[in-house]
Image (cartoon, rainbow, N blue to C red):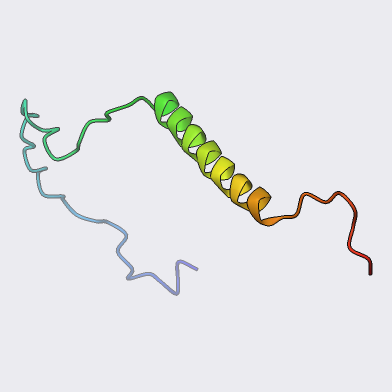
Length: 74
């Protein structure tokens, strides 16, 4: 294989020096909003809201469905 690629240079050469990075500033978190609630509080609120929606949907279904326990005659 070396005979086929005898002129192939695998050296990458010298890399340029790394650019200096600026030290983090005190206001580096300005762009990202902070959480108002913890994840567990957020999940609990989501579950509570879902249960309320289900309760409303269930009450609407109960209002439409007949109270007769007998099945339809077909």
